[in-house]
Image 1 (spheres, rainbow, N blue to C red):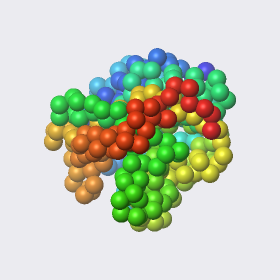
Image 2: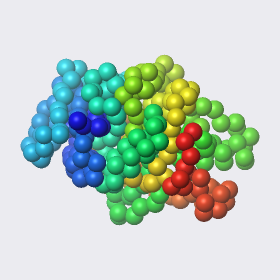
Image 3: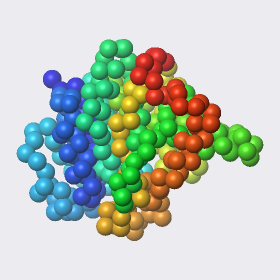
Image 4: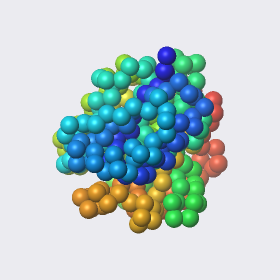
Length: 283
């Protein structure tokens, strides 16, 4: 029986091929990769750019939706919220089409979750600059529900602006492993960010807020196994997204943001970051 369903929302951009390959290379082989094509508007592009290059792997499943769900700022979150209702595995993971994983990502998370009887677990994140291949570990933003992101701490410290949830904490969507039973209850929160303009584009943060409030046991793997690319060359960007939105996701960010954040956190903790400890306690 498969342990994990990996859900990826697709627009037909070729970057998803890197994500697919990273899932195929996982040391945890008992998984299904569900590619959800977000409506007819993207089906033609997916069938032209992606489908012909897909490997012959029975673990890859394709679901083409009859309409687009990502419009009006919902992005992939309605698809991810649906996952809990339709998948048949005990665990669910999310992987954006423009991100990918280290090969031990799923194994480290499933082992942690099963051995410690947890309802959800998460990894840390590595940031890679697509223009030159340079990488840094993210030790300042996607660090979990127990530490406020560095920018909010900085603003509170120097400008007196008190951080507010759900913006204050972050687990990147690509870092989660969540039990199917739990995502049934917390998944719908991912789309409620649309109810408030102040919370737009924050589905992962809103999900984290719901997971925290559920009281379910969790832990961090302490490993930077989710890869989050930034600073994409122009030929790597998704034209459909760039034309439709002023905000083009993580592609327009630079490593310097994370270098500054990591420096801020080192001043606070030294080199012993609590979230990177391999023996992180169950919360």
